[in-house]
Length: 507
Ligand code: HEM
Image (tube, rainbow, N blue to C red):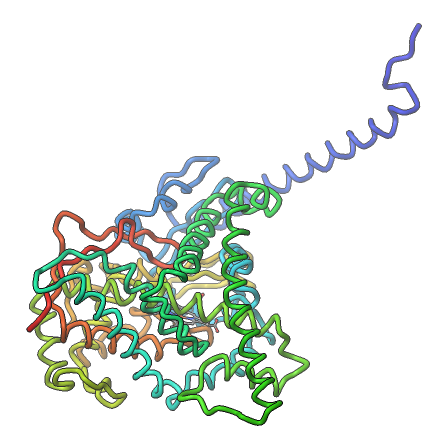
């Protein structure tokens, strides 16, 4: 009788390999099953919305209407677990006491979101951890000190005026509908180009920089898609997917753009040193600060670190600011009485706005209340996340074990009806001194809090004030009722279909 193929000599190793893989697969399946059972047991004290056994709540938040999140915040007090696939949970919190307990710890950033950001940002402040993060934060903090920021007011005003010049040309004497988000995005890019890199790019008036702006937009969209598509959490699957390929192309565009600028600056400094003709620039930019940090810490701050920090500032400071200014303008368009009150205050301080100084920004108290109310209603960074390095017990006694990914939903916190009366209403008086004093300090966190809060928050508040002051002096804004603003929650909040406003030039 012929021997079966299994008895052949060559078949043995194949057979053994097959049994080995089967055993490995089985072990992995058991591990995953036990992980799911453990998660189900640990999360038992926290009620959750109905879930699909395989997809979990993937559909619920991926498609991203913020109203869905608001509904859940009203229904499930303090927190709820959100399943992304059968074995992974993002634990959403939106209560001030929960936020305080969460932000007072030093858990590492969640490997999901931040790991997915690394191809774009590199290992900079946003994604670093431990002593490396501390070293970078310590070296870069001087870039945001009062004297440096003071010198940016004029730079910012110049970029805002360039945008307003464009608007005047588009509008003429008539009231015109304009999609302002794109203009504001280019304006914030222009400001960062100047403050981070001292680059006069004319990006607002020439279209050669569109590629960079579009690449930031598309990269952020792909990363967000990956976050809520658990199969794409695996590098091997994502890398070979069409989105993975596209992200690589976008990252190449972003990095080539900043790398060229850094190399040009290094050449310039080398030449200046060589020929002894050091030119005094009008202000110190972030690249100066980072280069001097590098010079002082030669061994600890490589060229890769330098490039990562430049990319981090460019990306962390652009989309957030474009959103922050656009949402503010939109909220003031919807609320003409508050718009008028801001305009009166600004006129009283700036006159015709031909110049604007640091001290004047400090006098804009009503405008600041409106800025804060807009940051509450539409926080540009809608959530942040961490992976618990040790168990946490919340003030109500419920706890979570180590290893869980906790997402602080800043949007949820800012729309939590348990903290904010009529949370959907734009009411700047919430931020009067008296009302602020009565609220839990962790109720309003647009820039997060604790050691890993936003390093650029002062910069952001200055830019918001300069932009809104100069815009309101020259234009009256009102909404286009046929095109209401719909938010798209990506890593940073985006408009789904642009931000359309009626602009009317003021005499
Ligand atoms: C309205 C505008 C802005 C908002 C709402 C905002 C919000 C935030 C938030 C919530 C975080 C914490 C992220 C986390 O913990 O995962 C953060 C971190 C950060 N932001 Fe901002 N940001 C804004 C503007 C800026 C600007 C203009 C810059 C720089 C020029 C900047 C640079 C950074 C950096 C580098 C970090 C990481 C800090 C660290 O981990 O040490 N941000 N921002």
